[in-house]
Length: 211
Image 1 (spheres, one colour):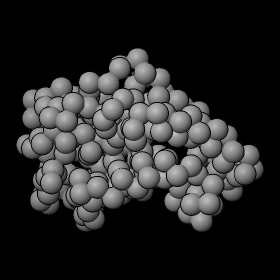
Image 2: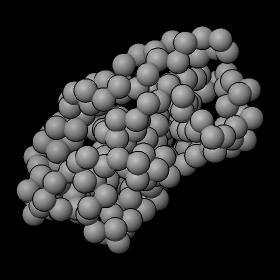
Image 3: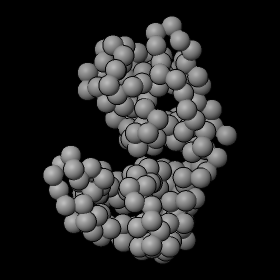
Image 4: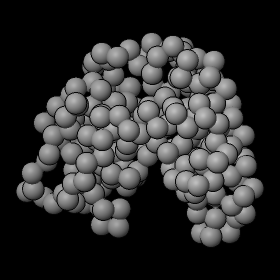
């Protein structure tokens, strides 16, 4: 069976699990502890970050977007890859670069020695662009239906919203809030977010099952 090393709360791992579930692939999950990474995972990918997908043929895919694209190349029943690839790439690059930078310095201001309000404002500037796109596209980022960009980005927006939920509810555009709520309360997200015990050699590998 193909095996995914994952960490439940990591947004990169979340988006990988979402794509694997949407593709309906047979995947075993190995939930890890970031402070106690198994040697088997480090042998597969010395980066030491999740997700790490180990295929039955021995190939290793250790970048979340590569996992998503690999999964959807096998099976894309909801046409997540149908949106404009250039626009999809631009949105994800913006998310993984400037937005993630601002998010980390807002959420972990004490760790970074930064002003949380300044970086929250920077992140909201990017989110305002997403909100406008959602409003113009009928509730989606890159076209008339949910696509790769929506799934790749919403776990990070979820992390931003959870940093101060009261502030988010008071200040985030309504369309953006509805978009996030729709993805974060979906049956598929509930499935991929189920709690699992940390994996140990010889332990079972629960399957990732799409609802």
